[in-house]
Image 1 (tube, rainbow, N blue to C red):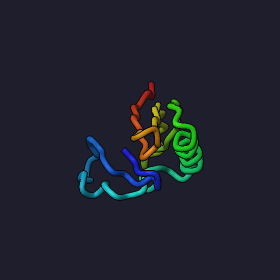
Image 2: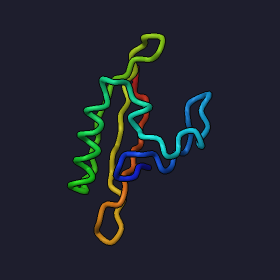
Image 3: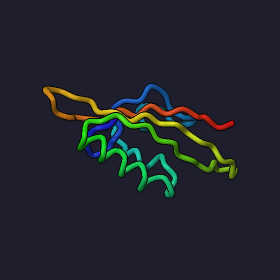
Image 4: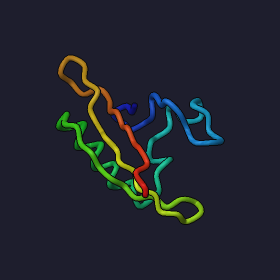
Length: 95
């Protein structure tokens, strides 16, 4: 879950060596490779403005240079017909 400034407000799990407390309050962009930041920002802003759910695929390179593809669903969190946050659900779909 993200606030409208794209800071993480809730996460159900993290990668090794990070705790949930390390992640809460941190911008989502701190966990994305540089080549994905602009695309993610554009998509998060689209969902916040339109309140429409979208699905995207993003390719990442691991520290070891491996290519991984993630499918992400981005949706609005609404209250009283107003977008108050965002939800992002991602899964590794690499073959």
